[in-house]
Image (cartoon, rainbow, N blue to C red; front, side, top):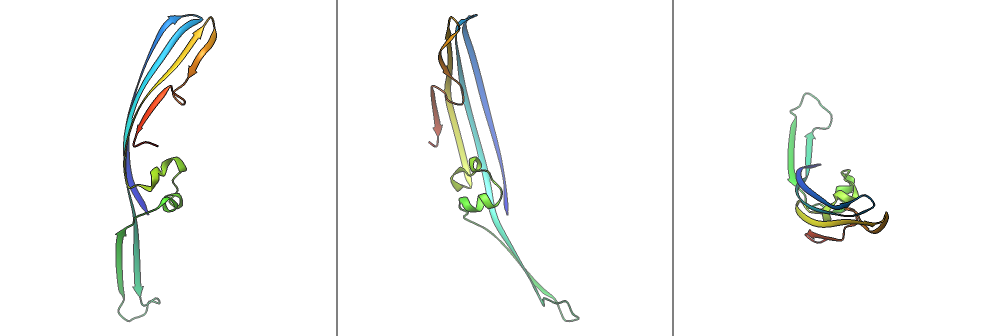
Length: 124
């Protein structure tokens, strides 16, 4: 089983210089997030297997696991959510995207999905 929680925040700021067919637009973006995930296993045993008039005994054990990527895939996480199979993940990033047009022709087009520069901690 897998329990966990996460939170994140991002800020985007855009400034456009010029207008019409000639302009430069720059976007600065900052984000951070954290996730905590607790992989665990629970075992229940009951004796006897067939319920009769005799006394019934049971045992319950719960313990955490040091899970690998395969465990997280089996728990239903997508590849982008594996986060190197870490249980506590803290990430931060900053980047600059730009778009420059001169007389309607794109001279530079680097969106946030492929920015001019991007720094991530921890690096990936």
